Amino acid sequence: MGISEKLWVNLLGFEIYWWLAIVYGQRALPALFIMLMLHFYYHSTPKAEFIKVLLIAAIGFEVDTLLTYLGWFEFPNSPNAIPPFWLFMLWAGFATMLTTCFCKFPQSTWLQALLGAAGGAASYLGAAALGAVQLPHSVFISGVVIAIIWALLLPIFLGLVRSLRRSYHEKHMV
Image 1 (cartoon, rainbow, N blue to C red):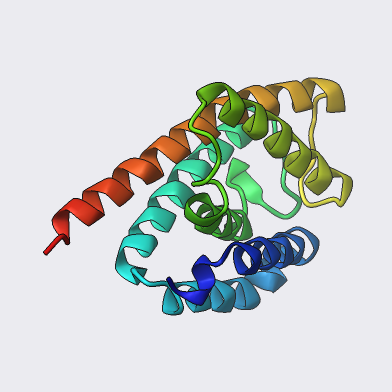
Image 2: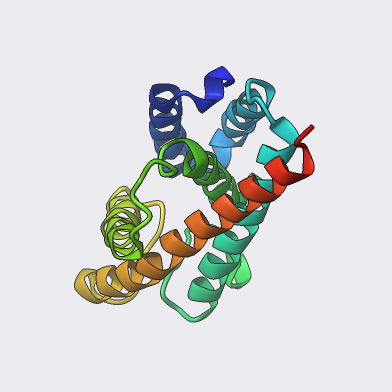
């Protein structure tokens, strides 16, 4: 197991990553990129991890792009309803936690949905309070919509990660 797969390293790393992305936005991109590359460098299966991170980040960013296009999010200095690139990087940072931090979470879809609803809403509402994103609808309505979306996303992401991990291990068994 690589150091980037240790629970405490991953949790602390993502906490720093989240704050950098939310507080500094585009100015944090070099630091976010370096942290992400260090994660891959110290991972025991960097190629498989890269594929997982890229896939989850792409899906998450597309969901946020759709929500932005539909008027649920507004990002300062981002024209044409396209979220800023730091948000894609934030999704990549989040994806690194799925294997390490959430893989030990019970496989109960209901518990995953509850964690997703609470954590997802808290993350976006916190980002809005810090000015990284604007929520054109009321905080309550925005929180409910985000919670519903995340109640669906987290179980899907965890299932995807388990499937990718199983596929990788089946391919590389000797």
